Amino acid sequence: MIRGILNTYLDGFLSLASDKEASRLLLIDESLSAESLLDLLRQWVWLQDLDQASCLKLKLWFQLSYSDLSLMFGVSRREVNQWLRNQRVLLLPTYRPTPNLAEGLSCFMVEQHLSPWLDGELDDLKRARGIHSHLGNCRNCQQRLESYRELQSLILLSRNHEPEIREDEWESSIQKLRSERKKQVSRVFISLAVILAISSLLAWAIFSKPEKMPNVYEIQG
Image 1 (spheres, rainbow, N blue to C red):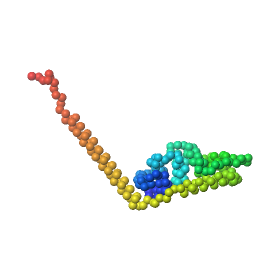
Image 2 (cartoon, one colour):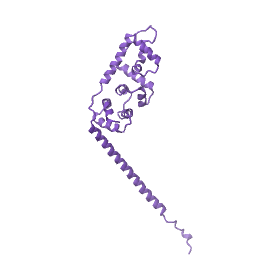
Image 3 (cartoon, rainbow, N blue to C red):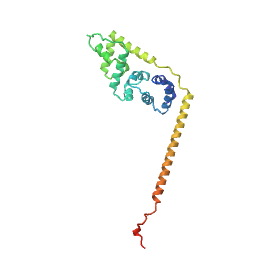
Image 4 (cartoon, rainbow, N blue to C red):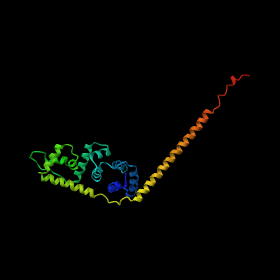
Protein backbone atom coordinates (compact mmCIF):
# COMPACT_ATOMS: atom_id res chain seq x y z
CA MET A 1 0.00 0.00 0.00
CA ILE A 2 1.34 3.45 -0.88
CA ARG A 3 2.19 6.16 1.63
CA GLY A 4 -0.43 8.61 0.32
CA ILE A 5 -3.32 6.24 1.05
CA LEU A 6 -1.98 5.47 4.51
CA ASN A 7 -1.70 9.17 5.33
CA THR A 8 -5.31 9.71 4.23
CA TYR A 9 -6.52 7.30 6.93
CA LEU A 10 -3.67 7.72 9.43
CA ASP A 11 -5.77 9.65 11.98
CA GLY A 12 -8.31 6.82 12.08
CA PHE A 13 -5.73 4.06 12.48
CA LEU A 14 -3.83 5.74 15.31
CA SER A 15 -7.02 6.93 17.04
CA LEU A 16 -7.86 3.25 17.46
CA ALA A 17 -4.45 2.45 18.97
CA SER A 18 -3.39 2.57 22.62
CA ASP A 19 0.34 3.30 22.31
CA LYS A 20 0.55 5.95 19.56
CA GLU A 21 4.35 6.02 19.14
CA ALA A 22 4.85 2.26 18.97
CA SER A 23 1.68 1.84 16.90
CA ARG A 24 2.87 4.39 14.34
CA LEU A 25 5.98 2.32 13.58
CA LEU A 26 3.97 -0.91 13.63
CA LEU A 27 1.40 0.57 11.24
CA ILE A 28 4.06 1.59 8.73
CA ASP A 29 5.63 -1.88 8.85
CA GLU A 30 2.26 -3.61 8.43
CA SER A 31 1.22 -1.35 5.55
CA LEU A 32 4.28 -2.35 3.51
CA SER A 33 3.00 -5.93 3.23
CA ALA A 34 -0.73 -5.12 3.06
CA GLU A 35 -2.38 -5.60 -0.32
CA SER A 36 -5.18 -3.09 0.31
CA LEU A 37 -6.67 -0.75 2.88
CA LEU A 38 -9.17 -3.42 3.94
CA ASP A 39 -6.38 -5.97 4.30
CA LEU A 40 -4.46 -3.57 6.56
CA LEU A 41 -7.61 -2.80 8.56
CA ARG A 42 -8.31 -6.48 9.19
CA GLN A 43 -4.76 -6.89 10.51
CA TRP A 44 -5.08 -3.72 12.60
CA VAL A 45 -8.32 -4.87 14.22
CA TRP A 46 -6.53 -8.06 15.27
CA LEU A 47 -3.34 -6.33 16.45
CA GLN A 48 -5.25 -3.76 18.53
CA ASP A 49 -7.71 -6.36 19.84
CA LEU A 50 -10.71 -4.32 18.65
CA ASP A 51 -14.24 -5.64 19.01
CA GLN A 52 -17.74 -4.66 17.92
CA ALA A 53 -17.58 -1.52 20.09
CA SER A 54 -15.31 0.03 17.45
CA CYS A 55 -17.67 -0.84 14.60
CA LEU A 56 -19.29 2.59 14.23
CA LYS A 57 -15.97 4.42 14.25
CA LEU A 58 -14.57 2.02 11.66
CA LYS A 59 -17.65 2.52 9.51
CA LEU A 60 -17.42 6.31 9.54
CA TRP A 61 -13.67 6.88 9.70
CA PHE A 62 -12.83 4.47 6.88
CA GLN A 63 -16.06 4.70 4.84
CA LEU A 64 -16.64 0.96 5.07
CA SER A 65 -19.67 -0.92 3.82
CA TYR A 66 -21.59 -3.43 5.89
CA SER A 67 -20.03 -6.18 3.76
CA ASP A 68 -16.53 -4.88 4.61
CA LEU A 69 -17.34 -4.93 8.33
CA SER A 70 -18.94 -8.34 7.98
CA LEU A 71 -15.70 -9.77 6.54
CA MET A 72 -13.58 -7.94 9.09
CA PHE A 73 -15.38 -9.34 12.13
CA GLY A 74 -16.54 -12.65 10.65
CA VAL A 75 -20.25 -11.99 11.19
CA SER A 76 -23.30 -11.48 8.99
CA ARG A 77 -24.39 -8.14 7.54
CA ARG A 78 -27.49 -8.40 9.69
CA GLU A 79 -25.35 -8.50 12.83
CA VAL A 80 -23.33 -5.51 11.61
CA ASN A 81 -26.59 -3.65 11.03
CA GLN A 82 -27.70 -4.40 14.60
CA TRP A 83 -24.33 -3.39 16.09
CA LEU A 84 -24.38 -0.01 14.33
CA ARG A 85 -27.99 0.70 15.23
CA ASN A 86 -27.44 -0.21 18.89
CA GLN A 87 -24.33 1.97 19.14
CA ARG A 88 -26.12 4.94 17.63
CA VAL A 89 -29.14 4.52 19.89
CA LEU A 90 -26.90 4.35 22.98
CA LEU A 91 -25.15 7.58 22.01
CA LEU A 92 -28.32 9.49 21.16
CA PRO A 93 -31.00 10.91 23.46
CA THR A 94 -34.01 8.71 24.21
CA TYR A 95 -36.48 8.75 21.34
CA ARG A 96 -40.21 8.34 21.71
CA PRO A 97 -41.93 7.88 18.34
CA THR A 98 -45.17 9.83 18.06
CA PRO A 99 -48.41 7.99 17.24
CA ASN A 100 -48.91 7.96 13.51
CA LEU A 101 -52.37 7.31 12.12
CA ALA A 102 -51.51 8.18 8.52
CA GLU A 103 -50.90 5.60 5.82
CA GLY A 104 -47.41 4.28 5.27
CA LEU A 105 -44.65 3.53 7.73
CA SER A 106 -45.03 4.51 11.36
CA CYS A 107 -42.48 6.57 13.27
CA PHE A 108 -41.52 3.40 15.15
CA MET A 109 -40.73 1.51 11.92
CA VAL A 110 -38.76 4.45 10.55
CA GLU A 111 -36.67 4.52 13.73
CA GLN A 112 -35.98 0.78 13.40
CA HIS A 113 -34.48 1.23 9.91
CA LEU A 114 -33.06 4.75 10.05
CA SER A 115 -29.50 3.56 10.75
CA PRO A 116 -29.08 1.39 7.59
CA TRP A 117 -31.13 3.91 5.56
CA LEU A 118 -28.72 6.68 6.52
CA ASP A 119 -25.77 4.42 5.60
CA GLY A 120 -27.30 3.58 2.21
CA GLU A 121 -27.42 -0.09 3.24
CA LEU A 122 -31.17 -0.71 3.28
CA ASP A 123 -31.73 -3.43 0.65
CA ASP A 124 -35.54 -3.23 0.73
CA LEU A 125 -36.18 -0.51 -1.87
CA LYS A 126 -39.89 -0.33 -1.07
CA ARG A 127 -39.11 0.30 2.59
CA ALA A 128 -36.41 2.81 1.67
CA ARG A 129 -38.92 4.78 -0.41
CA GLY A 130 -41.39 4.57 2.48
CA ILE A 131 -38.84 6.05 4.89
CA HIS A 132 -38.04 8.83 2.44
CA SER A 133 -41.73 9.62 2.07
CA HIS A 134 -42.32 9.55 5.82
CA LEU A 135 -39.40 11.86 6.52
CA GLY A 136 -40.82 14.36 4.08
CA ASN A 137 -43.96 14.70 6.19
CA CYS A 138 -42.93 13.97 9.80
CA ARG A 139 -41.17 16.72 11.71
CA ASN A 140 -40.44 14.41 14.63
CA CYS A 141 -38.53 11.91 12.47
CA GLN A 142 -36.77 14.74 10.63
CA GLN A 143 -35.37 15.86 13.98
CA ARG A 144 -34.32 12.29 14.75
CA LEU A 145 -32.51 12.08 11.42
CA GLU A 146 -30.76 15.35 12.21
CA SER A 147 -29.63 13.85 15.54
CA TYR A 148 -28.15 10.90 13.65
CA ARG A 149 -26.24 13.24 11.34
CA GLU A 150 -24.96 15.35 14.23
CA LEU A 151 -23.71 12.18 15.92
CA GLN A 152 -21.83 11.20 12.77
CA SER A 153 -20.20 14.63 12.65
CA LEU A 154 -19.13 14.33 16.30
CA ILE A 155 -17.59 10.89 15.70
CA LEU A 156 -15.76 12.12 12.61
CA LEU A 157 -14.37 15.05 14.59
CA SER A 158 -13.31 12.81 17.49
CA ARG A 159 -10.29 11.47 15.61
CA ASN A 160 -6.88 12.55 16.84
CA HIS A 161 -4.90 14.59 14.35
CA GLU A 162 -1.59 12.87 13.66
CA PRO A 163 1.40 14.22 11.69
CA GLU A 164 1.69 12.62 8.27
CA ILE A 165 4.20 9.86 7.67
CA ARG A 166 7.25 11.51 6.18
CA GLU A 167 9.11 10.12 3.22
CA ASP A 168 12.20 9.42 5.33
CA GLU A 169 10.07 7.39 7.81
CA TRP A 170 8.61 5.43 4.92
CA GLU A 171 11.98 4.77 3.28
CA SER A 172 13.50 3.75 6.61
CA SER A 173 10.79 1.13 7.06
CA ILE A 174 11.28 -0.11 3.51
CA GLN A 175 15.02 -0.54 4.12
CA LYS A 176 14.30 -2.32 7.39
CA LEU A 177 11.87 -4.67 5.65
CA ARG A 178 14.40 -5.43 2.90
CA SER A 179 17.10 -6.11 5.49
CA GLU A 180 14.81 -8.49 7.40
CA ARG A 181 13.88 -10.31 4.20
CA LYS A 182 17.56 -10.75 3.32
CA LYS A 183 18.18 -12.19 6.77
CA GLN A 184 15.22 -14.55 6.33
CA VAL A 185 16.56 -15.70 2.95
CA SER A 186 20.02 -16.22 4.47
CA ARG A 187 18.52 -18.27 7.32
CA VAL A 188 16.62 -20.39 4.82
CA PHE A 189 19.77 -21.06 2.79
CA ILE A 190 21.75 -21.88 5.92
CA SER A 191 19.03 -24.27 7.08
CA LEU A 192 18.95 -25.95 3.67
CA ALA A 193 22.74 -26.26 3.68
CA VAL A 194 22.69 -27.88 7.13
CA ILE A 195 19.93 -30.29 6.07
CA LEU A 196 21.87 -31.16 2.89
CA ALA A 197 25.07 -31.74 4.86
CA ILE A 198 23.31 -34.00 7.39
CA SER A 199 21.57 -35.89 4.58
CA SER A 200 24.89 -36.39 2.81
CA LEU A 201 26.53 -37.73 5.99
CA LEU A 202 23.64 -40.13 6.59
CA ALA A 203 23.77 -41.31 2.99
CA TRP A 204 27.54 -41.86 3.23
CA ALA A 205 27.12 -43.75 6.52
CA ILE A 206 24.43 -45.99 5.04
CA PHE A 207 26.02 -46.78 1.70
CA SER A 208 29.61 -47.08 2.94
CA LYS A 209 28.68 -49.59 5.66
CA PRO A 210 30.76 -52.79 5.25
CA GLU A 211 29.06 -56.03 4.32
CA LYS A 212 27.62 -58.10 7.12
CA MET A 213 30.32 -59.78 9.12
CA PRO A 214 30.17 -63.59 8.71
CA ASN A 215 29.03 -65.73 11.61
CA VAL A 216 31.94 -67.49 13.29
CA TYR A 217 30.22 -70.82 12.72
CA GLU A 218 30.09 -70.06 8.98
CA ILE A 219 33.87 -69.69 8.76
CA GLN A 220 35.38 -72.80 7.27
CA GLY A 221 38.73 -73.99 8.55
